[in-house]
Image (cartoon, rainbow, N blue to C red; front, side):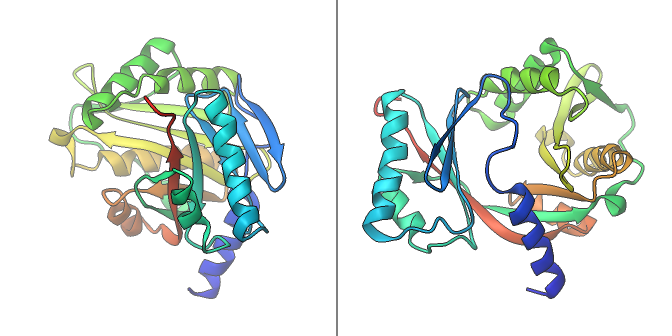
Length: 264
């Protein structure tokens, strides 16, 4: 890792780790030693620092308390780890406690100013910012179709966050003939140097035609106007090559570990 990459990772750790200072609508925080539990969403979340600070049996007990808390609520819970986290034994102890690893993603960071270019869309495709609940339901249906899974919770999450922070949540759709062919959103946090890019899933027939890149460029333009220095993405294997070509740099990896109540 170069010194520049190390500096980017240090800023990421400082500003993007842990729970947001202000919880989203309907979400509450509970503290347990070095951890914060977020409750009240479609699934629970556990946030912690880069080094949790406990090892061995004490770490097992800390993990078990989080699992048991959400078991009592009959809720699924996600504990997101990073490739540079400590202790190194954390993933193994999460698995031993019944947590299952979801897909590995690469954390990439890029300078906003470099990404804020004019979108270059295919003929007949237009970008539009959306705020209505009806459009959020359309996005959820679009995502569910592409991924072949239940994503009904997405419409509520996007609607609630957009209504609670209309100046800090931007949801965009790429449409052709009135149909959504891709959708993406961005979260801004006052006082932070980062904007988080999410979504970007494009229907198979429209992939490889510049829509994903255009959605990055459009959101970067908004972030640049707000004076945000960096864009951050948890990139899948599909989006990582595109983001690297755009100038994003990989700083670490992230793996969510998820515990699901029996019977769900």
